[in-house]
Image 1 (cartoon, rainbow, N blue to C red):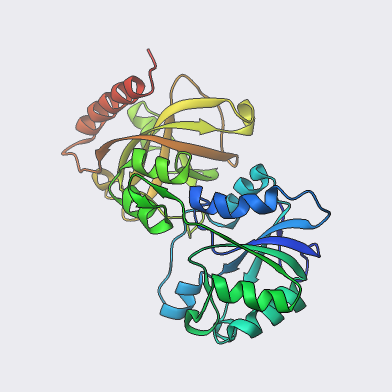
Image 2: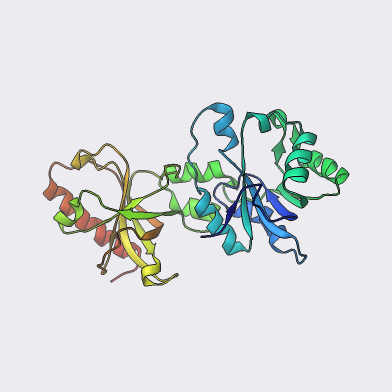
Length: 307
């Protein structure tokens, strides 16, 4: 597991990309890349905040495209040494832009280089912008890099646009914005065994409570586990939702793998969502549900080009 640091345990001095980076999407990657490409001896870190500042300021829980462990994994693949998480509270929210730079970047983190997006805002009531950061940072001997916003055919790439695409089951659009398939990952735990009873055994995936779920329904997927090698995938079909036919009340993620059987309990499993097949629905009987699952498997195999 890539290392997640606090300000106290972070390796210093640092070159950092600063922001929330929820999703680590293509726009975020553009901000992070100048740090990855540095050839000096500075530790390369992404500095972000937890809880999400909007959660603290509005009092509303904010689900994440990439909870911390998943975010750290993507960053490590990019070449980042550490994900440093700064606890965000109202005291930090009240800091002026200059106090934010002095207390957080200089005194706490010993930052020497900071990279942000052109729309970066910081300090009390978001009063500081990227130009302010560059001017204030210069007074402390910090190099500040402002990166232009990345656009695609939908317009600006943003976490909110990715959420909107996922809520509609528009996986192609979400993938274009992210630069990769949307992924769900967690530990396999025991469920009600209903899938096994119907002839379609499933792995019940326990996700972080903060993970953002896409539109409820059925998806074709590719699953990854260390059990069969780091980058080998097993195709399958996944149901995301509350299982109304079985009178479920809480969302679950259940994965049926094609042409594979074995014990996955307590193992870490990652699934990449490939195609949205159909929305969640309630069936009149378990036999009707079983027939639909068979149809779902047939359609998923066609989408995944499996004979």
